[in-house]
Image (cartoon, one colour):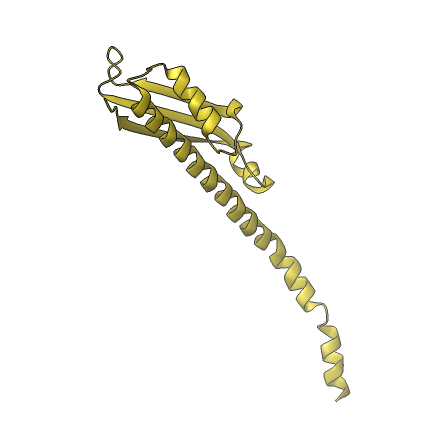
Length: 139
């Protein structure tokens, strides 16, 4: 009976050692999930802002075909988490001579920094996300 108790005393730190071996792998996976979720959320926000800008452009082109007004609308009304400094917005019409017919294309690019430092060590400090939406102009 005494030998049996002694055997259990030798294995007291076993679970701590196993946890110490698994903890870095677990944290790497957890931070990877958080960063990919962060990038996915920002990509969806960018897609929605681009779609909102394209929709505003096709509805209001007959009133005013100035691309700066569309860019200002996107910057003021988008609920994105990234700042407007790192966002490039480009609005083009398929027929620049007559913007009331054809298509309007809104292209947006945003530089997103990672939420945790794990993926930034592998992929760099920032990731460039892009979104392009093309819609027919309503006249």
